[in-house]
Every structure is written in C-alpha cells, then in structure tokens.
Amino acid sequence: NLLVPTCIHWSCDDVANWIEEIGFPQYRLCFTTNLIDGRKFILINASNLPKLGITDFDHILFIAASVRDSLGIEKPYWNRSIADPASSPMGSFLDIKSRTGPTIDKLTYSQFIRGVY
Image 1 (tube, rainbow, N blue to C red):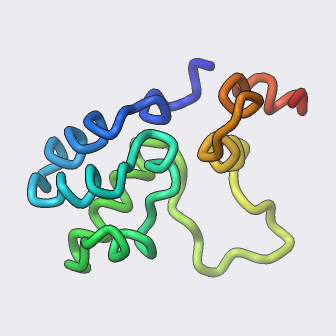
Image 2 (spheres, helix red, strand yellow; image 1 turned 45 degrees about the horizontal axis):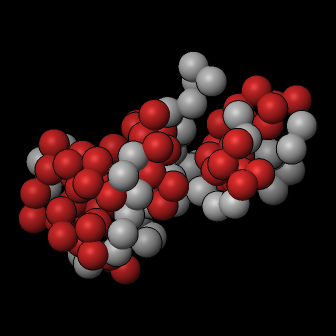
C-alpha cells in the first residue's frame, strides 16, 4: 500500500487544511460545508468545483491540478481513444475507494491489483 496516497484517509478538517496550504483559505468553508473528506476528495475535478462554490477559472484549474498531484494521477487527455483503458490502475482503485462500505473500507491496492475483492 505504499503507492496509495494518504490523502484518501483525510478527515474534512484535513482537506480544509490542505486547501489553505495550497493558498486558498477563502475556500475552506466550501470544502467543510460540503463535508469533503478524503474519499470525496478523490472525486474532485475541474467540472465539480463550481458545485462547491469555486467559480474562478484560474483557481479551478490550479486546485484540480493540485488534487491530481496529491493523488498521483495524470491529467485526463482530451484526445484519448475510446479503445484506451478508462484510467490508470491507481485511478481505477481510487474510483472504487471513493465509495463506502465494509468491503471497500478493507480493500487494499494489492488486493485490487490481484482482483481479490
């Protein structure tokens, strides 16, 4: 599990602290009001930041890139072929970990890679 980003285990306060640390303290309330914890943090991207109340386009781009950096995932390629896999193995694992439930809670990256879940 060394490859799995620790941010998936963050509390709402941890995420709010992160947004302040990257230079956007004005958005702390956007994240706490919407109860964005580590699991929901996985789902943050440029298209859903306005739903949280973040509407400055430059801020959206920077925050979305910072989320991807924190998660260790690549920027989506706009010209990707439909024949390509949906995302990297880590991206697919994080999509699953964004859900809740006892099975998902216990799922490790190595189990996911082996298909044991």
